[in-house]
Image (cartoon, rainbow, N blue to C red; front, side):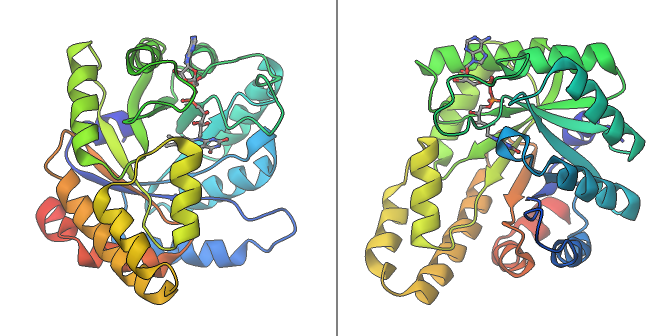
Length: 290
Ligand code: FAD
Protein backbone atom coordinates (compact mmCIF):
# COMPACT_ATOMS: atom_id res chain seq x y z
CA UNK A 1 0.00 0.00 0.00
CA UNK A 2 1.23 3.54 -0.69
CA UNK A 3 2.32 5.31 2.49
CA UNK A 4 0.03 8.32 1.95
CA UNK A 5 -2.98 5.99 1.77
CA UNK A 6 -1.72 4.01 4.76
CA UNK A 7 -1.34 7.15 6.88
CA UNK A 8 -4.85 8.28 6.01
CA UNK A 9 -6.22 4.95 7.19
CA UNK A 10 -5.64 5.18 10.96
CA UNK A 11 -2.90 5.56 13.54
CA UNK A 12 0.39 4.19 12.23
CA UNK A 13 3.58 3.16 13.96
CA UNK A 14 6.90 3.72 12.25
CA UNK A 15 10.57 3.68 13.15
CA UNK A 16 13.58 5.60 11.93
CA UNK A 17 17.07 4.10 11.70
CA UNK A 18 20.34 5.48 10.38
CA UNK A 19 23.03 3.67 8.38
CA UNK A 20 26.25 2.71 10.14
CA UNK A 21 29.48 4.36 8.94
CA UNK A 22 31.07 2.80 5.85
CA UNK A 23 33.78 1.05 7.90
CA UNK A 24 31.35 -0.49 10.41
CA UNK A 25 29.57 -3.81 9.91
CA UNK A 26 25.95 -3.79 8.81
CA UNK A 27 24.94 -6.87 10.81
CA UNK A 28 24.08 -5.16 14.14
CA UNK A 29 21.59 -2.90 12.36
CA UNK A 30 20.14 -5.83 10.41
CA UNK A 31 19.63 -7.61 13.75
CA UNK A 32 17.95 -4.49 15.19
CA UNK A 33 15.65 -4.38 12.16
CA UNK A 34 14.73 -8.02 12.71
CA UNK A 35 13.62 -7.27 16.25
CA UNK A 36 11.80 -4.06 15.25
CA UNK A 37 9.61 -6.08 12.86
CA UNK A 38 8.08 -7.74 15.93
CA UNK A 39 6.23 -4.45 16.59
CA UNK A 40 4.61 -4.72 13.17
CA UNK A 41 5.62 -1.20 12.17
CA UNK A 42 3.77 0.20 9.18
CA UNK A 43 7.04 1.48 7.77
CA UNK A 44 10.69 1.94 8.69
CA UNK A 45 12.63 4.90 7.37
CA UNK A 46 16.37 5.18 6.89
CA UNK A 47 18.19 8.51 6.98
CA UNK A 48 20.49 9.84 4.27
CA UNK A 49 23.86 11.23 5.34
CA UNK A 50 24.69 14.90 5.18
CA UNK A 51 26.49 15.75 1.96
CA UNK A 52 25.48 12.40 0.52
CA UNK A 53 27.94 10.50 2.70
CA UNK A 54 27.11 6.87 3.19
CA UNK A 55 24.41 6.89 0.53
CA UNK A 56 25.18 3.33 -0.58
CA UNK A 57 24.45 2.14 2.92
CA UNK A 58 21.05 3.90 3.01
CA UNK A 59 20.10 2.04 -0.14
CA UNK A 60 21.35 -1.28 1.28
CA UNK A 61 19.24 -0.83 4.42
CA UNK A 62 16.11 0.21 2.54
CA UNK A 63 16.61 -2.80 0.29
CA UNK A 64 16.93 -5.10 3.32
CA UNK A 65 13.67 -3.72 4.79
CA UNK A 66 11.92 -4.06 1.47
CA UNK A 67 13.22 -7.61 0.89
CA UNK A 68 12.17 -8.76 4.38
CA UNK A 69 8.59 -7.93 3.38
CA UNK A 70 7.48 -7.23 6.94
CA UNK A 71 7.24 -3.45 6.73
CA UNK A 72 7.45 -0.79 4.05
CA UNK A 73 10.76 1.01 3.53
CA UNK A 74 10.86 4.79 3.39
CA UNK A 75 14.10 6.20 1.95
CA UNK A 76 15.17 9.66 3.10
CA UNK A 77 16.72 11.57 0.22
CA UNK A 78 18.25 15.07 0.12
CA UNK A 79 19.24 17.85 -2.27
CA UNK A 80 22.70 18.23 -0.70
CA UNK A 81 25.39 17.84 -3.36
CA UNK A 82 22.99 16.09 -5.71
CA UNK A 83 22.61 16.86 -9.40
CA UNK A 84 19.57 16.01 -11.52
CA UNK A 85 21.48 13.17 -13.21
CA UNK A 86 22.73 11.78 -9.89
CA UNK A 87 19.26 11.91 -8.37
CA UNK A 88 17.79 10.07 -11.35
CA UNK A 89 20.47 7.39 -11.07
CA UNK A 90 20.08 6.94 -7.33
CA UNK A 91 16.31 6.80 -7.46
CA UNK A 92 16.58 4.14 -10.15
CA UNK A 93 18.63 2.13 -7.62
CA UNK A 94 15.90 2.53 -5.00
CA UNK A 95 13.22 1.55 -7.47
CA UNK A 96 15.19 -1.57 -8.43
CA UNK A 97 15.46 -2.41 -4.71
CA UNK A 98 11.67 -2.34 -4.39
CA UNK A 99 11.51 0.94 -2.45
CA UNK A 100 8.40 2.90 -3.37
CA UNK A 101 8.46 5.82 -0.93
CA UNK A 102 10.86 8.71 -0.53
CA UNK A 103 11.06 11.36 2.19
CA UNK A 104 12.28 14.27 0.06
CA UNK A 105 14.36 16.78 2.03
CA UNK A 106 16.65 19.71 1.54
CA UNK A 107 19.12 17.99 3.86
CA UNK A 108 21.32 19.21 6.67
CA UNK A 109 23.96 21.52 5.23
CA UNK A 110 27.52 20.56 6.19
CA UNK A 111 29.29 23.19 8.34
CA UNK A 112 30.38 26.22 6.34
CA UNK A 113 28.10 25.56 3.35
CA UNK A 114 25.77 28.36 2.19
CA UNK A 115 23.56 26.24 -0.02
CA UNK A 116 23.14 22.63 -1.10
CA UNK A 117 25.82 22.73 -3.88
CA UNK A 118 23.39 20.61 -5.86
CA UNK A 119 20.81 21.36 -8.55
CA UNK A 120 18.01 22.06 -6.05
CA UNK A 121 17.97 24.36 -3.03
CA UNK A 122 14.64 23.31 -1.54
CA UNK A 123 12.76 20.12 -0.91
CA UNK A 124 9.74 21.20 -2.96
CA UNK A 125 11.98 21.50 -6.07
CA UNK A 126 13.31 17.99 -5.41
CA UNK A 127 9.72 16.73 -5.04
CA UNK A 128 8.70 18.24 -8.39
CA UNK A 129 11.68 16.57 -10.05
CA UNK A 130 10.94 13.19 -8.42
CA UNK A 131 7.37 13.40 -9.68
CA UNK A 132 8.64 14.20 -13.14
CA UNK A 133 10.98 11.18 -13.02
CA UNK A 134 8.59 8.66 -11.53
CA UNK A 135 4.92 9.26 -10.82
CA UNK A 136 4.81 5.89 -9.05
CA UNK A 137 6.86 6.99 -6.05
CA UNK A 138 5.05 8.20 -2.93
CA UNK A 139 6.67 11.36 -1.60
CA UNK A 140 6.84 12.48 2.02
CA UNK A 141 7.84 15.87 3.42
CA UNK A 142 9.39 17.10 6.65
CA UNK A 143 7.34 19.50 8.77
CA UNK A 144 8.31 21.59 11.76
CA UNK A 145 5.78 22.07 14.59
CA UNK A 146 8.02 24.71 16.16
CA UNK A 147 9.11 26.07 12.71
CA UNK A 148 12.30 25.23 10.88
CA UNK A 149 15.24 26.83 12.65
CA UNK A 150 16.17 28.97 9.61
CA UNK A 151 12.64 30.04 8.65
CA UNK A 152 12.09 33.78 9.17
CA UNK A 153 8.64 33.20 10.69
CA UNK A 154 6.02 30.56 11.46
CA UNK A 155 3.87 31.88 8.61
CA UNK A 156 6.76 31.59 6.13
CA UNK A 157 7.48 28.02 7.23
CA UNK A 158 3.83 26.99 6.85
CA UNK A 159 3.88 28.58 3.37
CA UNK A 160 6.97 26.43 2.61
CA UNK A 161 5.02 23.39 3.82
CA UNK A 162 2.18 24.27 1.47
CA UNK A 163 4.72 24.41 -1.38
CA UNK A 164 5.70 20.83 -0.52
CA UNK A 165 2.05 19.77 -0.58
CA UNK A 166 1.59 21.41 -3.98
CA UNK A 167 4.82 19.81 -5.24
CA UNK A 168 3.36 16.34 -4.64
CA UNK A 169 4.02 15.34 -1.03
CA UNK A 170 1.36 12.91 0.16
CA UNK A 171 2.25 12.83 3.85
CA UNK A 172 4.54 14.52 6.35
CA UNK A 173 6.79 13.45 9.19
CA UNK A 174 7.53 16.02 11.83
CA UNK A 175 10.71 17.21 13.41
CA UNK A 176 11.14 15.91 16.97
CA UNK A 177 8.74 17.72 19.24
CA UNK A 178 8.34 17.68 23.02
CA UNK A 179 5.56 20.27 23.02
CA UNK A 180 2.09 18.86 22.20
CA UNK A 181 0.39 22.22 22.82
CA UNK A 182 2.79 23.87 20.38
CA UNK A 183 2.02 21.11 17.88
CA UNK A 184 -1.72 21.70 18.32
CA UNK A 185 -1.27 25.41 17.54
CA UNK A 186 0.92 24.60 14.52
CA UNK A 187 -1.44 22.06 12.99
CA UNK A 188 -4.49 24.26 13.54
CA UNK A 189 -2.79 27.15 11.79
CA UNK A 190 -1.52 24.94 8.95
CA UNK A 191 -4.95 23.33 8.44
CA UNK A 192 -6.56 26.80 8.27
CA UNK A 193 -4.10 27.71 5.51
CA UNK A 194 -5.03 24.60 3.50
CA UNK A 195 -2.52 21.98 4.64
CA UNK A 196 -4.36 18.66 4.39
CA UNK A 197 -1.69 15.95 4.58
CA UNK A 198 -1.55 13.30 7.33
CA UNK A 199 1.31 13.90 9.78
CA UNK A 200 3.30 11.28 11.68
CA UNK A 201 4.74 12.97 14.75
CA UNK A 202 8.49 12.56 15.25
CA UNK A 203 9.28 11.26 18.73
CA UNK A 204 12.89 11.30 19.88
CA UNK A 205 13.11 9.22 23.09
CA UNK A 206 14.65 11.15 25.99
CA UNK A 207 17.65 8.99 26.91
CA UNK A 208 20.56 11.24 27.88
CA UNK A 209 21.06 14.85 28.87
CA UNK A 210 23.68 15.55 26.21
CA UNK A 211 21.67 13.91 23.44
CA UNK A 212 18.55 15.83 24.43
CA UNK A 213 20.35 19.19 24.56
CA UNK A 214 22.18 18.57 21.28
CA UNK A 215 19.04 17.66 19.35
CA UNK A 216 16.74 20.34 20.79
CA UNK A 217 19.27 23.18 20.55
CA UNK A 218 20.50 22.34 17.06
CA UNK A 219 16.94 22.19 15.75
CA UNK A 220 15.46 25.12 17.68
CA UNK A 221 13.02 22.89 19.60
CA UNK A 222 11.68 23.85 23.01
CA UNK A 223 12.24 21.97 26.28
CA UNK A 224 9.08 22.07 28.43
CA UNK A 225 9.34 22.60 32.19
CA UNK A 226 8.74 18.92 33.03
CA UNK A 227 11.71 17.99 30.86
CA UNK A 228 13.89 20.72 32.41
CA UNK A 229 13.02 19.18 35.75
CA UNK A 230 14.38 15.79 34.62
CA UNK A 231 17.58 17.50 33.43
CA UNK A 232 17.90 19.37 36.73
CA UNK A 233 17.24 16.31 38.90
CA UNK A 234 19.17 13.59 37.13
CA UNK A 235 21.98 15.28 35.18
CA UNK A 236 24.68 13.47 37.13
CA UNK A 237 22.79 10.15 37.33
CA UNK A 238 22.55 8.84 33.73
CA UNK A 239 20.63 5.65 34.56
CA UNK A 240 17.95 7.52 36.50
CA UNK A 241 17.87 10.16 33.77
CA UNK A 242 17.21 7.44 31.23
CA UNK A 243 14.42 5.86 33.26
CA UNK A 244 12.69 9.21 33.87
CA UNK A 245 13.27 10.15 30.22
CA UNK A 246 11.59 6.98 28.95
CA UNK A 247 8.59 7.57 31.22
CA UNK A 248 8.42 11.14 29.95
CA UNK A 249 8.57 9.97 26.32
CA UNK A 250 5.83 7.37 26.89
CA UNK A 251 3.54 10.01 28.46
CA UNK A 252 4.34 12.31 25.52
CA UNK A 253 3.22 9.63 23.05
CA UNK A 254 -0.04 9.22 24.98
CA UNK A 255 -0.56 12.97 24.93
CA UNK A 256 0.09 13.21 21.19
CA UNK A 257 -2.52 10.52 20.51
CA UNK A 258 -5.14 13.16 21.40
CA UNK A 259 -3.88 15.50 18.68
CA UNK A 260 -4.39 15.70 14.91
CA UNK A 261 -1.73 13.12 14.02
CA UNK A 262 -1.77 10.08 11.74
CA UNK A 263 1.06 8.17 13.35
CA UNK A 264 3.89 7.88 15.82
CA UNK A 265 7.33 7.95 14.17
CA UNK A 266 9.89 6.83 16.71
CA UNK A 267 13.53 7.78 16.20
CA UNK A 268 15.11 4.54 17.41
CA UNK A 269 18.77 5.65 17.26
CA UNK A 270 19.27 2.04 16.13
CA UNK A 271 18.49 0.78 19.63
CA UNK A 272 15.74 -1.79 19.81
CA UNK A 273 15.59 -2.04 23.61
CA UNK A 274 14.99 1.65 24.27
CA UNK A 275 12.30 1.84 21.59
CA UNK A 276 10.60 -1.29 23.01
CA UNK A 277 10.61 0.05 26.57
CA UNK A 278 9.17 3.40 25.57
CA UNK A 279 6.38 1.74 23.59
CA UNK A 280 5.63 -0.68 26.45
CA UNK A 281 5.36 2.22 28.92
CA UNK A 282 2.98 4.13 26.64
CA UNK A 283 -0.62 3.13 26.02
CA UNK A 284 -0.01 3.25 22.27
CA UNK A 285 -0.27 -0.50 21.69
CA UNK A 286 -3.50 -0.85 23.65
CA UNK A 287 -5.26 2.33 22.57
CA UNK A 288 -4.19 2.90 19.01
CA UNK A 289 -3.53 -0.56 17.68
CA UNK A 290 -5.96 -2.79 19.58
P1 FAD B 1 13.10 22.82 2.84
O1 FAD B 1 11.68 22.41 2.66
O2 FAD B 1 13.86 23.17 1.63
O3 FAD B 1 13.11 24.04 3.87
C1 FAD B 1 14.35 24.56 4.35
C2 FAD B 1 14.14 26.00 4.77
O4 FAD B 1 13.84 26.82 3.65
C3 FAD B 1 12.98 26.22 5.74
O5 FAD B 1 13.33 27.29 6.58
C4 FAD B 1 11.82 26.62 4.84
O6 FAD B 1 10.88 27.43 5.54
C5 FAD B 1 12.54 27.37 3.73
N1 FAD B 1 11.96 27.18 2.40
C6 FAD B 1 11.42 26.06 1.88
N2 FAD B 1 11.07 26.27 0.60
C7 FAD B 1 11.43 27.54 0.31
C8 FAD B 1 11.36 28.33 -0.86
N3 FAD B 1 10.85 27.86 -2.01
N4 FAD B 1 11.83 29.61 -0.80
C9 FAD B 1 12.38 30.11 0.33
N5 FAD B 1 12.45 29.39 1.47
C10 FAD B 1 11.99 28.13 1.45
N6 FAD B 1 18.59 15.70 6.98
C11 FAD B 1 19.49 14.91 6.34
O7 FAD B 1 20.53 15.42 5.89
N7 FAD B 1 19.25 13.57 6.16
C12 FAD B 1 18.11 12.98 6.62
O8 FAD B 1 17.92 11.79 6.44
C13 FAD B 1 17.14 13.78 7.29
N8 FAD B 1 15.98 13.26 7.73
C14 FAD B 1 15.03 14.06 8.32
C15 FAD B 1 13.79 13.52 8.71
C16 FAD B 1 12.81 14.32 9.28
C17 FAD B 1 11.48 13.72 9.70
C18 FAD B 1 13.06 15.72 9.48
C19 FAD B 1 12.01 16.60 10.11
C20 FAD B 1 14.28 16.26 9.08
C21 FAD B 1 15.27 15.45 8.50
N9 FAD B 1 16.50 15.97 8.09
C22 FAD B 1 17.43 15.17 7.46
C23 FAD B 1 16.84 17.37 8.36
C24 FAD B 1 16.42 18.31 7.21
O9 FAD B 1 17.14 17.99 6.05
C25 FAD B 1 16.74 19.73 7.70
O10 FAD B 1 15.84 20.10 8.71
C26 FAD B 1 16.83 20.78 6.61
O11 FAD B 1 17.45 21.92 7.20
C27 FAD B 1 15.50 21.21 6.02
O12 FAD B 1 14.94 20.24 5.24
P2 FAD B 1 13.52 20.47 4.49
O13 FAD B 1 13.29 19.29 3.65
O14 FAD B 1 12.48 20.85 5.47
O15 FAD B 1 13.94 21.73 3.60
